[in-house]
Image 1 (cartoon, rainbow, N blue to C red):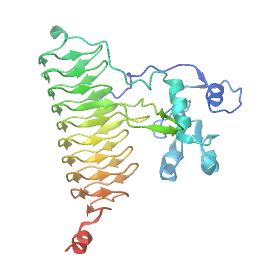
Image 2: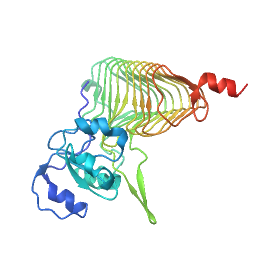
Image 3: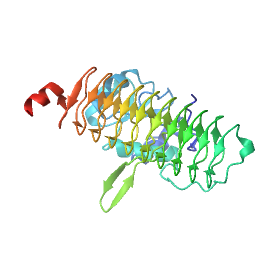
Image 4: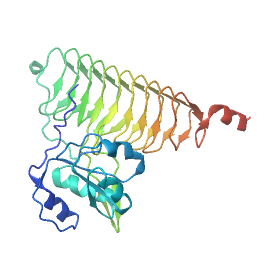
Length: 324
């Protein structure tokens, strides 16, 4: 599946001096910086950021020439790249992202929508009042429901069923995917910085990637990523009223039941079962073959092959013993 981001227009020929000026650092270095990326995907001419020891393994393998960080991590970063030291890393990243992607803070309505031109699609069936943006690609034998909106540049594979009243934007969707009624896919994440009497929004330039054979339930909301993508792995089935925040990565063959919530940048392995109304805190890693009981609150990493329940989530045998 092509996961290239063609949803946000990027400014070219951004110099290091422009970036540092934005961060109140004096420098006349005219080195061209290609893009801002997360540690995992950054290339040699990109800029990235580091603000937590939990990402140290990614830092060691990061290829970016420049990394935004703070005083606490300066020495660690300088072992692998050139550190740009700031007081607030995430706010600085937001400013630099907005420099590269001036329109990234706008989550506006796509006004370039129209009724689909049936002849432009191969054996695709459309319901009534469906609207399609520019450059949308839909594979053969797919079905798009009534009152559904698919915004510009979205890619949908073959044999997909998209329900009624669905909104899809900033997304790439594989084959044999089912998205049920009233789901919203690809909106911006909930990211901002409190600043006196005005909140500063964090730009989200990632996308949503839904792989083959996935089912997304009714009234699900899946946010696009900030710098990296939000990904739903192959054969994963998600029940109704689930919220998946920005940068969440869910592995293959997972079963997620109703009203589960994932905070930003959490990672879930393969063959994970999650009971209804469980909550997964941000920046956590849930391993493979994990089972999480309904109503649980996951606030720390869960290793492979664990069965947990409760708040905070703990080994299920311990939970049952304590609650006899």
